[in-house]
Length: 148
Image (cartoon, rainbow, N blue to C red):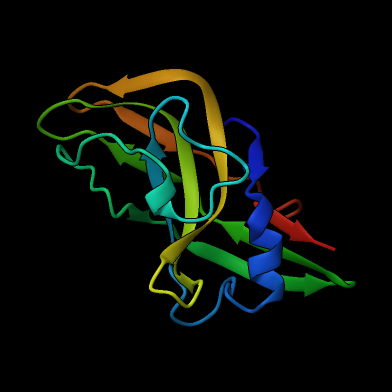
């Protein structure tokens, strides 16, 4: 898995209570984004260009399971479960990025789906029918997101 990159506004949105990591009603999701469309200054899922929906992929993204969100010695560690996406009935892509977003986080102006961060695969990927992409998350020690 590529290195996780934080969206700059994530810290501001977190401090203002817009994200509740591991909290009730805040489902984290993953979506794919095409080459050249994700930047640290992007704010919502609407800011990124996604591949066409279909063949198992939908532009509303897919759920990712929060394994645990825990506080240890003043450090919060959010651990997300690894997941597997399978193209079904045709190809999905091309895409280069996998973006993480919060479906309930909002700026209060109707703009939901605030971005948290992204992984860059370095080049475009197209999944053929039945091909899978395993999105591997860091383990419980380091977590996907660590806040100290």
